[in-house]
Image (tube, rainbow, N blue to C red; front, side, top):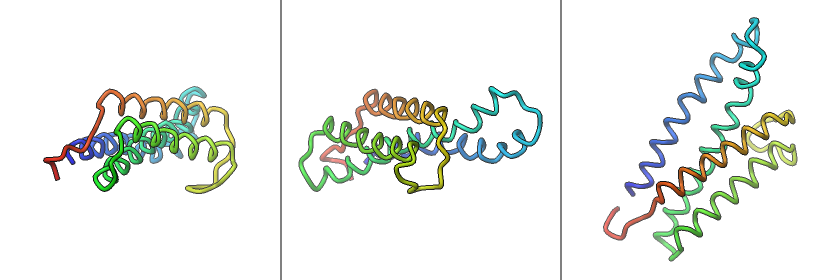
Length: 134
């Protein structure tokens, strides 16, 4: 369970700037902030959602692997695949689960970067459930 807790701590570390970006966004958009900064501020939450999606699904998969015998690398691939399908179909407006999105190619780019970062974290840490941990 220590590895799942580590993933949860990383998620909290990603949620904090996500919330801060959402909080300052109205003020920056109302003022004459730089266009590049506005673009970043509008699309950054998508990056965070990509990271959080991969880490959440990986943690759930690892937890379920206690019940079923699954290879952890397979769990990583399934988690990344499911997160990718969900995020890209949401950004392409195939569904509106999780919010009423407006298609923006920048959001899609930031989402892909977030998915890549999430996958990188997972493959770097290689989290697992050890038989002796609870």
